[in-house]
Length: 176
Image 1 (tube, rainbow, N blue to C red):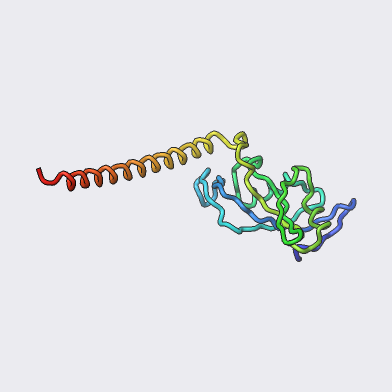
Image 2: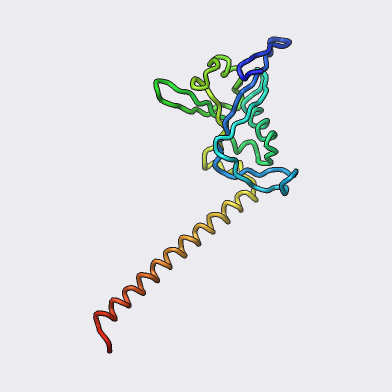
């Protein structure tokens, strides 16, 4: 089978494959198996996955299916599916509504991935209600660590500057 072959079944429902690029910047929480339950990891950049879907499969179902393939325990509401397309040498992305049907969009656009491709991304920042309490606490720990690192860097710069000023003052005053 190829990614652009369609099969028509009973009742005019057709099936086919869609390819989705995973463009995720935050860590994902995975379920058991080889890793510890609830362990977070970053997905490598540029990873894509192929799903076999029907013409009735919605964006929301595609997101759930992708997360299931990667055994991701995160709330599907944290993610959104985008369509990416090119017009006159310009690339555009547009968030798809949960009820849209990606296979239908793929069929209408034709086989050229420049005309239409799909990308899974995190929801836009500010939608914090999609995160669990442990995830939010983890974000706070990361921010507190970064804040402490910044404080330490400022203190080190200040100490170096203070030491240089004292040395310069000693030079100007000369031996006492």
